[in-house]
Amino acid sequence: AMVGHDGHRGTMYYVSVDPEQQKAGYGRVIVEAAEAWLKARGCWKVNLLVRRGNEAVLGFYGELGYALNTSQPIEKWIDPSKRGDR
View (cartoon, rainbow, N blue to C red):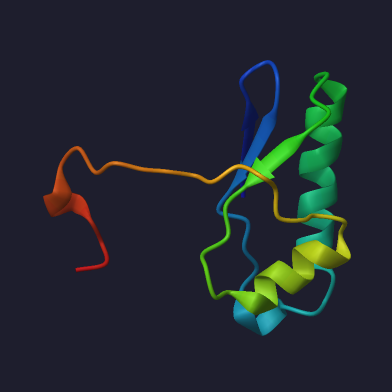
């Protein structure tokens, strides 16, 4: 997992647990550690991205108090050849 902040709000990236180790509580430990790191730096809100359709992960974060927000992320591929979904 990676976690950082811009001085105002935090962001978590690439939070994952090896599929063979899932359901052992490691994901919760990772998220709680990231939240504590952010809180210690004065960040009171954290954002993360979950791919559409990943209901299992949305359920996991929902159990930790995360919810969809009112903002919609947008993107532009400056170099479309770098897209990994084609």
